[in-house]
Length: 338
Length: 159
Image 1 (cartoon, one colour):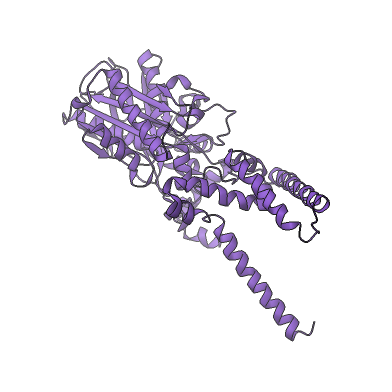
Image 2 (cartoon, helix red, strand yellow):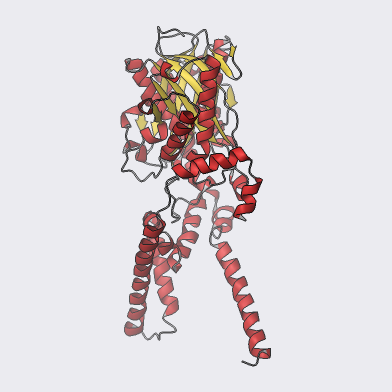
């Protein structure tokens, strides 16, 4: 049901039945290794290209999710997924091997919440019984496409971020015992004329702030309604900018209740500069870490605001600004009602 | 250029950029310069050692020792790049590891490794000079311009 300008309320409370999270070696050394179902020692995953390794991780995430829910893939109506690689081929190939009817979704690093919002919306309207939603990224494949070859020695500024190697997948269903997806807010594309691809956090912060503000306005709630507001991959710079923006707009947000997946995923002493990023970042940290906290009962209500910068290498070279987006999805423990 | 760019921005964009810039982690320029100076200097020191070694151990002169020295440095860079060490040095060294010939070698070698998955022709062949290509193009072009200026001055300038 539409609420306000750009939000949906899911009154049938679609459930997240299970999740699957896969990570690479760098993530294994990170802050939340327990958030992963499988951690790979090898960046290549025995494949002959980074892109195939990414495809493999997505396939594994899908398989793990299905296995944990004890549901056969024939029962899944749709797969909604996306990634960052040109034309999303790793996702398309993974969708091909899983042979589930497939909808591609692209919001760069906000793909995780775009796919979850769409899945919940379809389930809520009884358009399906089971939908898988997923996002993946691979550090080396992303570096190769967007920046420089992996082994190229270029000094990165302190505002740049480290793309997460991994995949995260969630199974959304009509009913079940898992946490409920209760509402979603679809963000507008924000363009503040920022052109530095090594400062995506700073560029995306405005999108996160806009979407959070729109969500609170549409649902007519206070930030204190949520135990945690989790942004996707703003990193240290973007988190601070978005936090100060919200405070400037008189939104009473609290610092300890405002966290970022890109900061959560890695340890402070890892060389990630401003923090983690990539489509897998918010998917893994949300599904593997914060959702588990909701299941354990440590958190009751969370708002996940995945952020994406929608530039391409072509648009950057043509000196076009970076368009940014953020989508918010609220997840609540069972038994709670809006 | 910077002012022209700013004029095109809407007032709200300008405000946001100023707001953002205040919270942006700045590049530690002075510290980076010192590190670049020391590490770049160290690479040149190694180059000098290799050069001296060729002059005293083999029959090279100061003029002819340049080529084998560069080849040796590039060979070492190849190993460091292949084993994934060079990019880590570069994150600390910055221009210190980019400006010497080792930086040029790293740009070519890392591209060659990266695009191996697209095959030898369209992958390695066409992407190998993706990063180093501009250096060659503008290196040759500026040498040409300088040569013309020199010729004009010496032929007609009476120097």
